[in-house]
Image: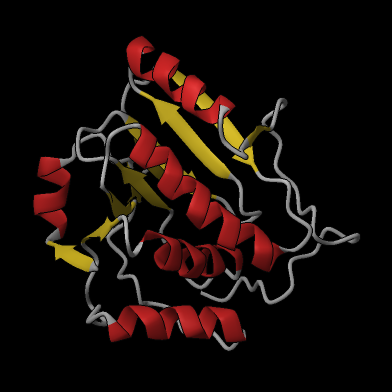
Length: 205
C-alpha cells in the first residue's frame, strides 16, 4: 500500500532525500544531495520498455529484500505536487489515475512510503510518469535507514548511490546475484528505439 507522508515531515525524517529549489537571483537551481560513498547506474536485459519496467519492479523488490528492507520512501525533489501535470499518453494517464485511486490529491507534494508488496506496481507507474515527462519533480527514494538513495531515469535505468563502504560492499554482492547489469560508462540512452526518441514524451509545462 501507499502511505502518504507530509512533505516537511518526510524531509525531517529522511534528510538524505535529494532536494532542489529554484534560485531566482542566480536563475538556476540550488541542489541538496547528501554525501555518498559510490554511484551506480543499473540496467536490465530487456527487449521492450514494458517488459523492462516489469522486471525492474521485481528486481528492485529482490534487491531491497536482500539488503534487509521491506519498504522504500519516495519524494519529489521540488515542492510541485505529484499530480501537477496531466498527460494524454495512455500509460502515463493510467499512472496518474493509479495515484489518484490511492488518494493522492491534486495538491499533495509529500513523500510516499511504498511497501514491498506494492512496489512492483508503483515502480511500473512511476517509470511511465518519468518516461513521459508527466511528473515535474525528479523522484528519489531511500530505504528506511537511508543506506541507499536512488531514482529511475527516463530510459528506465536505476541510478543508485550507497552511503558507506560497508553498505557498498553488501550492495555489490547482492547485485552480482541479480539480473541487474552495470552501465559501465554511466551513459543512459533509449535502447528500445532505433531513433532514440521516446514515444509519448512531452516537454509540456
